[in-house]
Image (tube, rainbow over all chains, first blue to last red):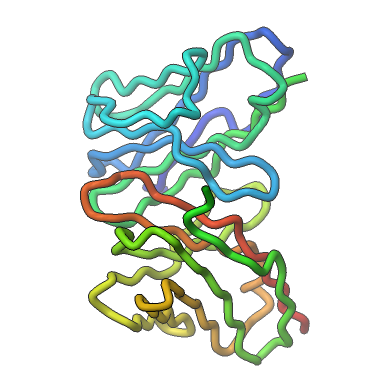
Length: 111
Length: 112
């Protein structure tokens, strides 16, 4: 399978804990995106990488959130001191053109 | 500010008939539009796209129409099949901006 993969698929954590998600993009894609989706809403843009450079961040990405793409391949999204409002589906996408191809997402539940 | 709007949260269509999903946008800078389909517990799957230099794009059973003056696009699915039951998202972007803006989605149910 050469699509976008994400790990884990589900994460349940207690408020205040830190969590980290991983995304492996389609191998030839140089652009990688993180989105967040909550119930009844469409995906909302969080951040974007071109190769290893993080070029854009949404104001939704508070200082508790950090994303990296150290070698321009896989990416990680870390949320520190999780809050119940962080519960959502976190989606990763990659592209080398106009179309973004999405992974299956990581469902985060903060208790 | 919801720049991409899908005003119908749900739509039910008989199998074999045409499904028409609508989307409106407010930002006149948008020049590229995409439709994604999403099943529960999966990520969005790309369906079809259209550039603002065109007013129609077709791919098999799926056709997207763009009316720039009305800032409106629609997705036609003909004939509708049970496997088309899913949530459909309209999304828009413009050249030089990597942020893809999504609508809130329309849940399509195909009735056998």
